[in-house]
Length: 93
Image (cartoon, rainbow, N blue to C red; front, side):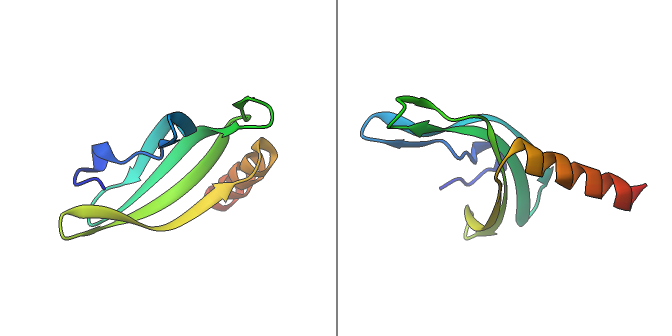
């Protein structure tokens, strides 16, 4: 667990293999509720290679000095990401 927002990561290792590899992240909001968007890849054992880039938005809540994940939304493909961008641009315009 992370006690500082800058320590939060989605890197996940099991049996010496980095199964989820964080490539980049942007902190969207800070505070007792923090929102972070991550760009990452996942290890695909069958292919013995990392997947295409994926994206996720995660919400964390600070409880007793530690940030605990409360919610997440995984963007399933670059096409879905483009559609989300289009809708947000339309709504914000």
